[in-house]
Structures are given as structure tokens and as C-alpha cells.
Amino acid sequence: MSKSILSKKQKEVLDFITSFWKKEGRIPTVREVSKALGLNSSGSGYFHMKALVEKGYLSQDKKGRFYLRNLINEEIIYLPLVGTIKAGIPVESPEYVDEYIPVPKSFVKIPEKSFLLKVKGDSMEGAHILDGDLIIVQKQDIAQKGEIVVALKDGESTVKFLSENYGIPCLKPANPRYSEIYPPFKIIGKVIGVIRLFK
Image (cartoon, rainbow, N blue to C red; front, side):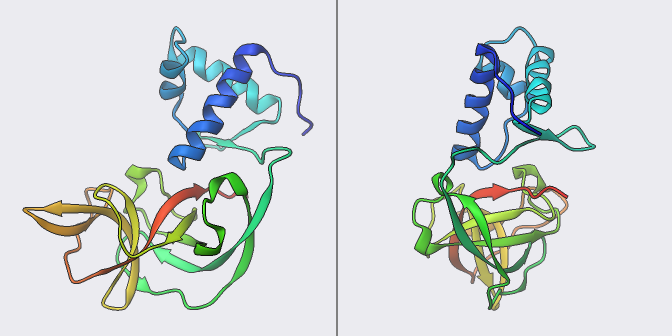
């Protein structure tokens, strides 16, 4: 689909969505878009986002969720996809590169220390990390409370929020159906972005 000329308001919406995605690693909700741009209602935000779909800047799946299409003139780098990580119960740690995936360079601060993992499971759905998503991970062994990390527990890897209960560090899911994971565990990276592939 070829991209069309945008109205002033549509460009404001697209600029906000792009900036939000680069900062938060996810697409803002219709309500977040409407509130940030001072639109009269969520309906107004939805109208502008649908227009961006029709003009080729956004995509929308069968459940009505919006996604940002590849940006034109965006410098691309290739990050290694090193395996699958389960957003639920930890699974075997990735040990090899499956393939290399193109990623906008603006998403990654330190390319040589970054890689991709494919998510399985729903324990992080409250953080907008869904089954099948690719997470961009920056290698590091420390993180701040509240950040999303990849950690090893008994030699197996998982993705969770780094949190704390009664002064004890823990790995917290973003789904109430799952329980926290307590030490010992080792942080191997911080999640700095999410990529949702289209099928």
C-alpha cells in the first residue's frame, strides 16, 4: 500500500505514536493518543488512527489492535534472534542464533550488546508483551526496580518485571494468573523494545 499525504492532525497522531513506541516499546492505546493530543474523545483518536491505516502508516489486526508499519527512510540494523523465551514458566536458555531480524536503528542504543528473543506465553500480557512478539534485549547484569528483564533461574530463562516483596528482589509477571519468582536468579538483560510481526 502506497503512503498518502497526511493532514496536520494525522501527522501529529503519527508522530506521537512513533515517539511513544520508541520510548515505551509498544503502541499507545486509542485513549492514550486522544488524551495526549487533547482530542475531544477516544472516538476522535480512533478516527485519526483508522485514517493512518487507510493511508498505509498503521496496520490493524482482527482484534482491532493497531501496529506501526515500517517507517520509510529509517536506518535499519540487523539483530540476532537467539531463540525463544517463555513469558510464563522459565524455559531452556537460548544458546544459538536462529536468524537475523531487521530493526530500526533508533530502537537500539548499543547494537553490539543487543539481541532478540521470541516470546511464548501470556504472563506479560499486562505489559503489552504477547505470545509471538519479539523482544529487544540489551545485555546487562543489573537493572532498576520496575524494569522488564530477562533472567536466568536454575539455568533457564524468563522475562518478567524486576520487583521487590518485603525487601526481597523478585521477578513479577504482568498477569495475575502467574506467581512471582524469587532468588536465586541472574539478570542477563533488560527489555528495551517489543516488535510485533505481521502474518
